[in-house]
Length: 211
Image 1 (cartoon, rainbow, N blue to C red):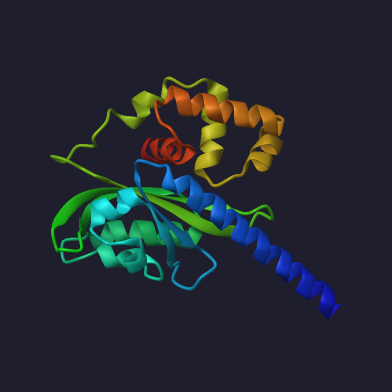
Image 2 (cartoon, helix red, strand yellow):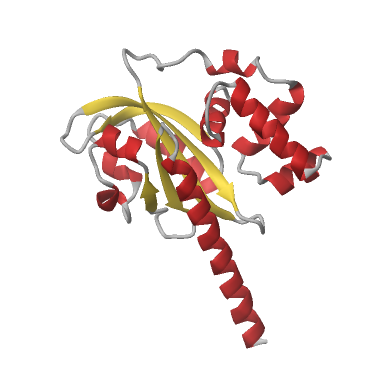
């Protein structure tokens, strides 16, 4: 019995590490400032950030790993906005807020922040992907997210909605009565229609639009 439990735990750990590597690899190609946090670690510590995040924040990846995103907060950061993010993480849910953050040199900037949960094959909450976008003149640097969603078909919207809630391809396929291949096809099509390059960017648009 003990050996069986140990084998099961080892398998879960291997799957967790594999998913982490896949997510880190995907963030490297994103033009959006992106961080990855491990939901299984106390205080949801950061395990990776990409180059775009380093440029936006002034912090290197080595300086961010092991810390919480609170490192970007300061006196001008809204407690209400922080509470929205904190509650979303506690509930394992997506969230979008705009708040004041601070670069490493102390310079404040308006930051549009999206967090999205990622679940593993067993359905357990494993990670959070967080993306940041500097807001210029109190406006986002692209057109209205809701307007962009009108380019999608009804089925693509349903797939994107479930992606935004952290569902994996197999779970989306089961929920919508589709094959995994068809779900992947819709994912590729919706990414193209939204004019983005990664699923993470598509999810951000969905969360911003309240999908």
